[in-house]
Image 1 (tube, rainbow, N blue to C red):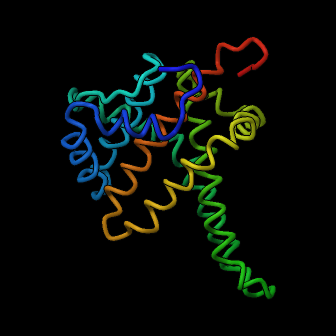
Image 2 (image 1 turned 120 degrees about the vertical axis):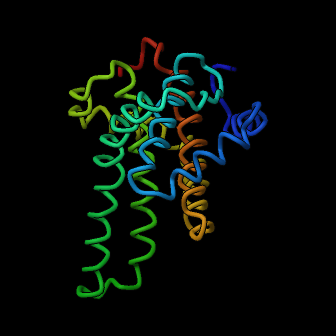
Length: 202
């Protein structure tokens, strides 16, 4: 893949990969069921590692289910801290906003928070993948810097992810799995393309 991946090209290459439909269907169905969705998380984690290693859009096999569950727990830690927790905090703030006469801004604030949390999570996941050390996630300033550095390139895929969640709510399992599948593939390629740049320090 070229050094600086383009979102539209990554999307087209991803959906044209062999067995994309079957692998997407499995992940989407698993994502509907609590606890069982850990396996889908594990698949997304393996996807992130495979893309970082190969530098190409790729789809791992659905195999080694015990290992997939353990990988899902690793993914879940990053997801809970950098995606779900910020969104829950944003929900609390949004609930309080009408009490200070800012109710008209509630939806805009919440959707913006989901967007930013999604991009922050992508940076944190890539940071963890570099050494598979949870201590690396304590460097919040670096993770925020990674997010800010790539923000102009990540806004479009972030909005696509947000669109999946909003427009496909009845099919939330497919929306979440498909959104993260695309987002993680693209962001992994983006960060990989600049990881070796001596002027950039992760």
